[in-house]
Image (cartoon, rainbow, N blue to C red; front, side, top):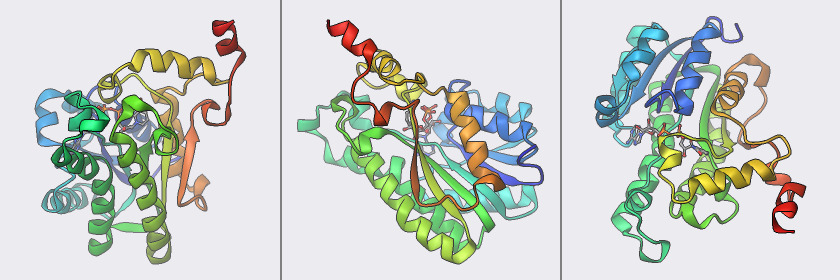
Length: 266
Ligand SMILES: NC(=O)c1ccc[n+]([C@@H]2O[C@H](COP(=O)([O-])OP(=O)(O)OC[C@H]3O[C@@H](n4cnc5c(N)ncnc54)[C@H](O)[C@@H]3O)[C@@H](O)[C@H]2O)c1
């Protein structure tokens, strides 16, 4: 019951494979009261209402690129939860260029703007609206999900790499600001490749998933393990961790080469 008495918002749960789905389940198991949110279009396609029933929660539609939707999300959450929040999960990513197989050398720049807005600037928007509404409690925790393509090149990840770099930069800048204002900590978890709708949309994902599995001494981190890490970051056990990009990848980010990979090339 690490989150007993805590209240929070979980974005990005589409179906049972979503990382956010597992986080919501674990929040509930650990005693938190939560509201769920996703883009209106995703609510029609996904199964989020099933999750809401499981977690005694309510779903509040919000396109997280819209300030008005975020304001409404916080107003409704405040009515339902009866208070400000202790934690927020940003688990949102989408690139029209990746979806439509646009090459990195032939990016559609309107779509690039959309990628950045959905996958990174929405994180800033969530925090800016929270700051203006004084919606975050003292010692609250904000977590976003990132990927190592922010630091190293993974060609198939295309403009999502730019989005993740921006996401991690916003984490530092807003982490400083919210730390001063409300002792709020802001971090990203840089997660292993994980089989989800967003993950599977990336070309060559399966080959890369298997490669990362063999490169990581502990193997790929699963969505459930990522959810456990989120619970730790929402809990009072992580009070002084802030402005960090935290690798949760079974050791992938520190491994040059593994015996498994050498064997495959010998
Ligand atoms: N799957 C992986 O391999 C992996 C690895 C590292 C990081 N991540 C990150 O984890 C996060 C969650 O992705 P996932 O893998 O669980 O996939 P997912 O497809 O289940 O989740 C992505 C979510 O973003 C939502 N979304 C898209 N546009 C939105 C908008 N405008 N407003 C609100 N919500 C919107 C989608 O509806 C969906 O629920 C993303 O940031 C992703 O980049 C994923």
